[in-house]
Length: 93
Image (cartoon, rainbow, N blue to C red; front, side, top):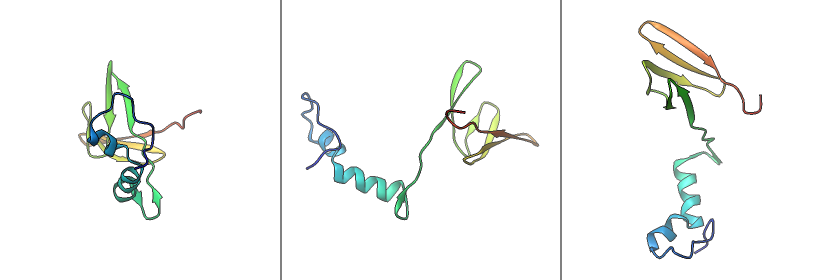
């Protein structure tokens, strides 16, 4: 078994070792995070709003807003009949 990182000296549970087995991780990425022959980009969006951390997910709620869609460039929110489109900043901009 090849692991993606060395096991801690205190790791004695076999389930922990299987969780970081390189083949298991690769299979999980391919089967659950893949799109054809490449991995899907994962970039969870966290927003600090009204002194709270929010995880923004398509279809989820963000404060009083329904998250309609998330793309690389923008996030669309709905509040009642109104739609708000937020432009995303790229890291480093």
